[in-house]
Image (cartoon, rainbow, N blue to C red; front, side, top):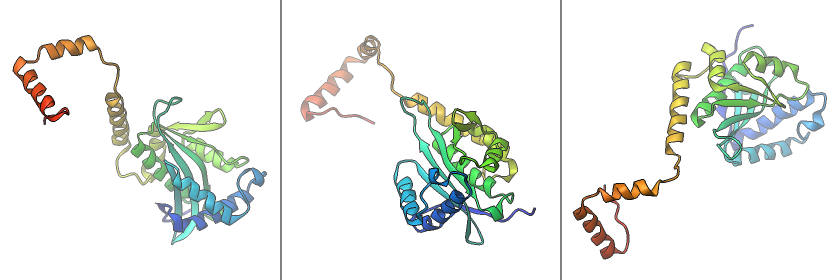
Length: 228
């Protein structure tokens, strides 16, 4: 089947009604619709607005000739006490039935991979819609492996799976290097414990005139002056 020209953008408030209508369509395709989302489109629109308002919330909308054909809901979860690095958590991905196998899912995951790289997330988690075997097969082809109730894939592995069909401007190797550099920078900027003995020894090596001069500045201004 010929792949369609698909545009993916970050949805704004004006797009949420169209995304809500797609959510309603996804609901009707499941065996347990009441467990997926509300049947009220207006409530769905408000729920999507809440997702956009929380830190890291993302709503992606795929369109063809300006018509909505798919969406992806995700959150960037920053490093915390349970996880020492950011991750991208995909809550839902859906493609309209008439546009499946035409590159919409690839385009949405490519945009999600860009978000993961931008956030320094090394892994992408996803929760397939219950009963949606098509989505589960698609995620498996993209390298997502079972992880408890989720599926998870290394961001670098996802980029390789997307290959030339992805919309990423950088080659996968460059993106992997970017992730590694951001991880290294994050580690290096984390403040660790200070050895006071070493600090005092270093201060003791400072020339006396410099210490006296700085002490005069502190005494004269009532605050510490940081030079340079």
